[in-house]
Image (tube, rainbow, N blue to C red):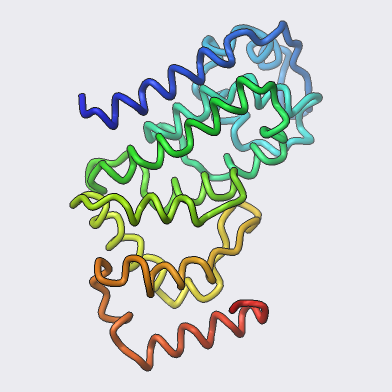
Length: 237
């Protein structure tokens, strides 16, 4: 196995270990949507919860559960493992982690999550898009919204000079420039993080020579992008 993928596997194992000592829990919630058998399953050992039920908890709105933060915390290793391996669409994961206030969880759990983010990100960038279970843009969105910061993850991308990282870059740049989406680009299920200013600066400086995108070589189009970005967000530098 590739060393970077080994690191990702180790980081997922570390999540399992950090969350293994959860105290007994009785799940409850909306009885219109879920039956007693669902609550019984969610109250049992997290590793025995079905993939379908993990997916349900990953995306269901918080007010459907009696103790959403605790339930989401218990299943976070399962949710992130499924997301990192492409078995679960990332969708609202970062938004739900914020709603569950993950940074206030027990120190060992929160710290293990903090260590997981850069490991997942590096593993993504070291895997060619054709083989990656999830796109760089999706992973970047999750970790940016979950951590409330974008620049450190862009800096990691800048530091990785591999064919796979550049392939992800080409795909990402093309994607955000389609229909000028980058001029008002929000990340997160609820648009929690506005990324335009930082992304534009990064594209036009740090990785400009690596982004072989004709639209960034067109002064008129570039001026249009910058004008649109400022119009969408008047506080954009």
